[in-house]
Length: 209
Ligand SMILES: [Zn+2]
Ligand SMILES: [Zn+2]
Ligand SMILES: [Zn+2]
Ligand SMILES: [Zn+2]
View (spheres, helix red, strand yellow):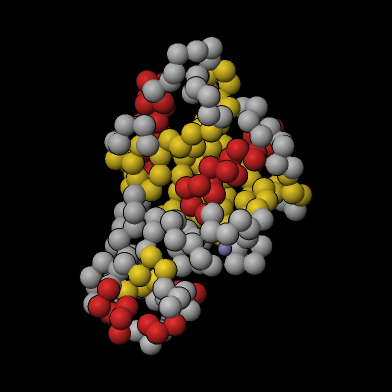
């Protein structure tokens, strides 16, 4: 069952809501207003979206010389980390070393980089370069700029907001339930339920947000 949702998200710096397409215009004004005092340095702005689930998206900013490992860390923290699975950035078929500078990784002609977390029950993302600027973001080498708003999934049985996911049934596109229908569902006794969370990894492995 599909979710009732728009493509809107919110700015992580000021809370402003905007659609996915209008968010970049907002970010361009907002990020400089949230810079720290300090020497400006080259920064790049990246947008990540979940493969096959484009309503899940993030816009992040990285110091140009920050290694991909730092981007990996932020993606795990926001969206992915369940039990320390392997992950990789790739351009075409070549895997990029986690020590690669982010600006080098995203400097290719198409500026698109594939990312996978967990090579078993994989969550796949695509990242693209959407901006460059000079600024000062303080000590952290990457920061979140904006992300999609939580998606309101209706219960498969009654249209109330779903709170629970059955991982046995999620692959078929179903398996999201309100509390009452989760209790009534055929897998209720198997203690496998996972919470509805704002992540493309919802319902996968042990991901609880
Ligand atoms: Zn803002
Ligand atoms: Zn896991
Ligand atoms: Zn229900
Ligand atoms: Zn089930």
